[in-house]
Image (tube, rainbow, N blue to C red):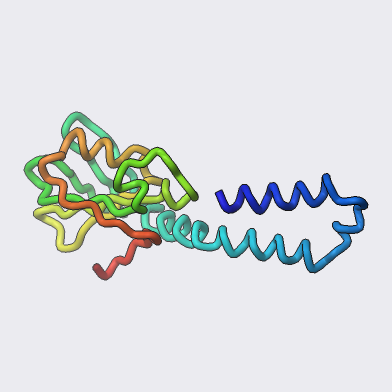
Length: 158
């Protein structure tokens, strides 16, 4: 929403200014570019974080189970192997709000704890867009409370 306002501001200056010399104002253009970068930087950081954590993972969805291929491991997630799972995302995502303010509202991850794994497995929305719906359909009884994060970075040491 903020990005849209900056874009509208820039376009309105261009359209409604008396002359085009406003575009020659390097401070104004530099300021608009800096605002654009500042407000997109958190989104880019989270996007790269999610991409880096799931770039070597693929997931195959089968009836009542998922097969996760991680490097050279084959991990099966089903009702016998799962301990619990948690949705980590922004407040609008975890509360299923239809209002989305930024790309961060679509960048979330599922933290899956399995019986035979030492550390949790992180599955991002980049891997499968509706991953939380898949987990709700198949493993609703294993869900623990959602974690609200305004900046949902995956930290592997958790």
